[in-house]
Length: 329
Image (tube, rainbow, N blue to C red; front, side, top):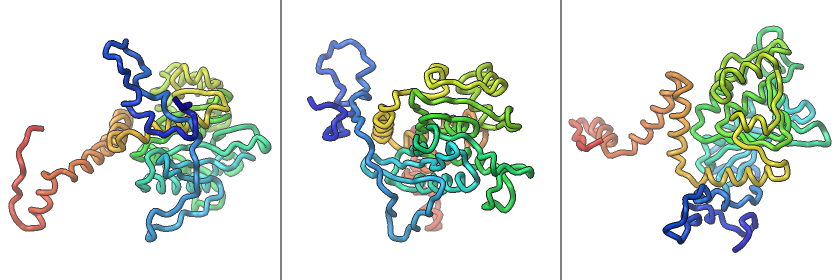
């Protein structure tokens, strides 16, 4: 049998059938899910190419990079400001919003990877160090010359990430601090290198996040630990973050790229509609009426594909009473 990490190993090896034990009396095993059979061959990323001629060319990004893999059905959005530990300014957030919209609307994409371009020759490894304090304004927000008025644009990005029907996998290598820490928490999943560090700095710098930055953290690690991270501004290493539920898993730095590919491929093998509806349902519990509206929207989309819904539309257009089929729900 070929090594499951070989470049020749097909992704199909990770199907549920590949994990079946020929013995009908074999003891239960978690390995029957086939996850460890998924190839860890690094994803081959390419520059974004329009799917159709009528689509607009992608914007020219400066603060981030955007790549896709049609083979593995995923997109990669990466911070690209290593000289400031990938701290974001309004332009950075606007570019991530544009890239996220591209990935969400692209039917070739099933998974969105949010990460950073690590360049250890420039600066210490980092995912994101939060808002760039050099462009923090005295007028209530951030201003780098691209905003009409200073604003906290990252709050809009957080909502956009929650409402995207596609799962966002955050891959952290190095520091995930402040606003960067909040972006990883808002992501659906987080995996990290063992050299990564997590924490909040807001109260030490005259800042805080009373939205997802507080409520999401409390949901993930509990009220006491969340208050500890916010009130003391203490950092967690990757192993502690994993054990407390702040992140999903941590791997040695050299294994992170392969593990990212493994996670992406397993998600991409699953039903995109099931994933989208599950994400909406999980968000609904935390996001109130807005979360319920998102879940309702996914259900409406499914209903529009039914004969019952189509009969209602057709009857309206044909100016006749609808003849709805009656069936058990």
